[in-house]
Length: 417
Image (cartoon, rainbow, N blue to C red):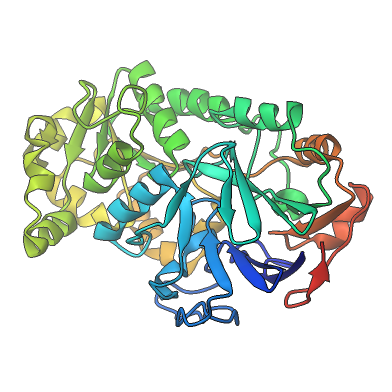
């Protein structure tokens, strides 16, 4: 078996790996790079058959999880190329496709299931469910030609499913030749004293922020980060507030399939506010069932001002006009619960101007979706691969000082597994 990294050898995001064995090929992830602007067209990696589906030696694309930097170019590949992904991840992407660029309509050829192997040509692919800020994420063990490669995808040990990471460390696949391991946090500062280091810390910090707010809390987070959505819900309850979601968040929650454990739009302390942009989208698509099904949970603009002290509003900058028209921002505060680097992007200028205009203070309460260096060390020691190859990192030069048997490879370089 041979491998080459098309993107990710020296950057975080845009991950794509091609494997070859017995004249057939398998692709792991087809990510959109984080540096690309929202409307920027990014070409597919140069992989035969990917765009046209005209090369039978390409047996498929396996997607580790549903973040755009791992699956964001999937809409550019031929419909004739088989795609494999977690079933819930596929549902989430299909739901998100209705609302905008973060979704993709997929018709997978098969689904990734924790520790159940798939045979794709000469490749045996075994997914391992992992803890990450994307729901239904997997590490992927690929076996072919008597060789074994474990692709970590993105993972961590401090979310709401730490038992999946601990199980991978406790019951790792044996005789792994190459561990293709993410190193996102090798170049990023560790949390300062007092900052959250786990998803439970995020929940606790949000409780404090919510209780200290006189009016409405504007919570800025990604609904596809289901762990964070649950943290917001739990913190809202502990602060005696209702969590308000929009149609997009409600759709993602429903798509998880865990209606007994993931807060749903029909739960008593969950309310649904449909911003103007989504009402227009529903009308144009004649998708009225999306709002009709939530009639009993709806909050309307005229109710927001009166109830603002009891609400945590799932918010994004595009909703600013809705809340201004509702005149419900007295005493409000905002919580940013995503990577702080996004706040430095020009796309956040409008949000910051809105907050300044209304005198709304912004606090950052976030924890990374990626493993700490200490947990990566635990993982590498447990896997005990013959070689560790860096990916999803902009600091591959840091690997040799932290892990044994490191072998870095450049983008586009074929190497033997």
